[in-house]
Length: 210
Image 1 (cartoon, helix red, strand yellow):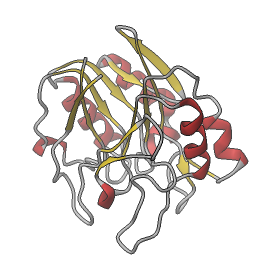
Image 2 (tube, rainbow, N blue to C red):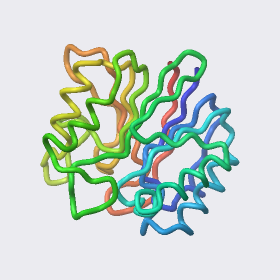
Image 3 (cartoon, rainbow, N blue to C red):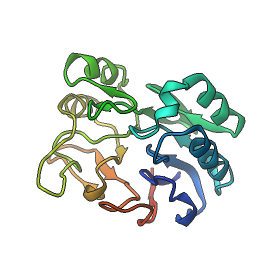
Image 4 (cartoon, rainbow, N blue to C red):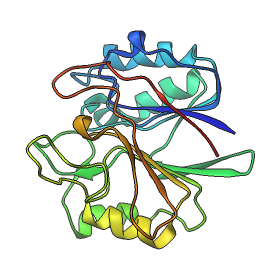
């Protein structure tokens, strides 16, 4: 199964070349200001991409997706886009699970407090998941900002270590793009942020087989 993965396009999606895929994954932050107009424009584009299945989670910039969650879920469904919100979909025997949650920062969309509040979301990730999709990274893996701080989620890292999915796809930290590893663990960690630091829509989507 061929996957094509991206995130953090921030309305730069029209400049993104998307190759044919079995599954196209967008790991959140497709808007800049979180408006309905931005969200529907992105969904219209996503619906026409050359992939059999399109999986989507929201990100912290995608405010309308939390504020008007029923509306956005309906808009996605009308375009045959699978929206994951602490939920799973199985495609040809491969289990995908996705969540938009990130640790609180500036009171943006899908923000939860570190510790008990956000851990309640990660505890929903079931064992046996093949591809985990979150907007933000786990602590210490693909989460290093330009001044050196690691800003990922400790509780997410603990849960990923417990379930060890084959692949963990995320974005959020633009400057940490690329494949990362947790020594001794089997999981491939992919920060697929399209946006470079302080710019938008500059990186190609990531391709892989599962």
